[in-house]
Image (cartoon, rainbow, N blue to C red; front, top):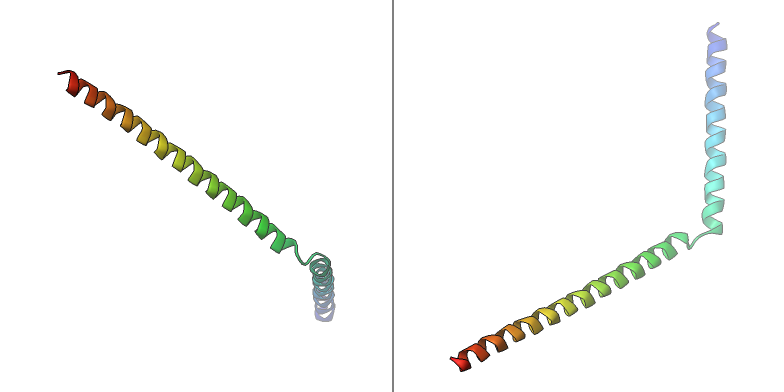
Amino acid sequence: MKDKKCSIVKTVLGVIAVLAVIGGIAYAIYRYLHPKYEEEFMDDFDDDFDDDFDDDLDDLADEVADQEEEAGDKADIFEDEKTEA
């Protein structure tokens, strides 16, 4: 009875080991056939990040320019009121 249980456990562990080896081989073949996948993904991610960062800088520059223009307009109005009085 004990030998039968031992045999079943060994068989199950053997099957699991074989499946793990097959999975490892399949993964190795996949990585060999597609080696640049992660590098290309990271390049695309970096490009997208840089584009977004540049867009944010452009938006910030536009916002600062608008604020400076508004401040200049307010200063002109203040100076006009001062000269009228």
